[in-house]
Length: 108
Length: 391
Image (tube, rainbow over all chains, first blue to last red):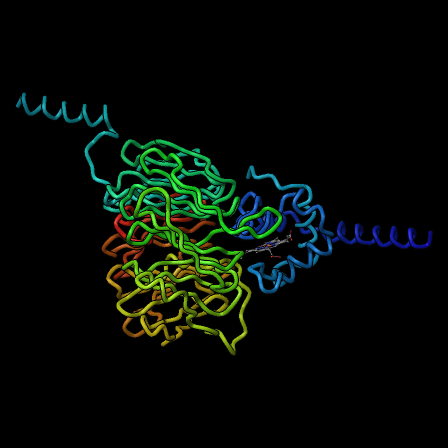
């Protein structure tokens, strides 16, 4: 009971911060552009995979948000996945993960 | 007077009616990939113009092109496994096949009859008849568990009707020999190093070199003496220096070979390495603006032009080969992705992705000659490649 309560408090706080710190509209479109073109150079422009694995909703559904955010910010040592932490804040990486989970449209 | 008029008329008429049918060669043509739109622009380097565009080529986010030996057809390898054959003169897609789920590049055989494509998914190489695009041979890569096969990278053609390529996940180099028909003899070299990510063959077709991501070094195969096996070269070339994160994989295809020296991008360092051929020793490291992606020699070998990885990719630098110094820094615009010289090197064409344009520079004066509009341009491929091994 206590445990459930605790974890729900925890969840709320995560959701809370994620919402509070969403990037502004300009930065969002910048991030989406980067995702498509810079992440896309290894993961494929449509994120269906390339040298790096696919980043489609189904391909990442087993991974937790924390894991994905860490991979994005810290990279995976010994593989080509570079650490993006210098360019992407925690909140920005979290927002990207949210976008990845929802599926990114490739119309623009 | 009258005949002259009639003549002009007739000339005009034929020019109008068969605007596309005017006799011309293809030696000054080229293809610019528009990576986001899945289209290409066909350009010519004599008057430096864009002639026409073609759409419907699928996902070209990582695309490359080879040319038939007569320079008439372009074969375009798309990210989505699409292989398209384009008639540059008739201005149309002649044939298009979806040959895999995810591909990375291709090559044309010495005799021009075979097109090979290297695939990520399913990992392997497929070989097609260049006239019909019918499948000729399927070479699945080594299994790596889960029913998956190793991704294939660094596919090139080599003399003797061979294709050479590297297996990213399983760390191998394979040589597929098609000299005796469509059933290739395959020679496999194992344990060549961790995570080979690209490969090149020297312009004479003798040495195949794979770049390794998992270690500071390169793997070398002498195709004249394959019995000697794969040798490690430049082991620990970055030792003692902190390696920077690599935001974009360098391309080896653009490695510059000048006389007995090779100029190559150092992975994770702001340097172009100079390596002496035969001894394979590093003889110099030239400091440059960022992590090099392409280091390409002007055809006469006097200059090396270098572009860089994100986020320092708005700059291009020119290295003077005799002095091994950067003699010019140009700022063509955001995201310079690729560069290509005209066959004799008087112009260089640069694609500037984020600015939607291709810039043409004079390589002697560094003057900007013209700008051509293109939608998120990436690779630029001129037909002179038709006659060069490994391109």
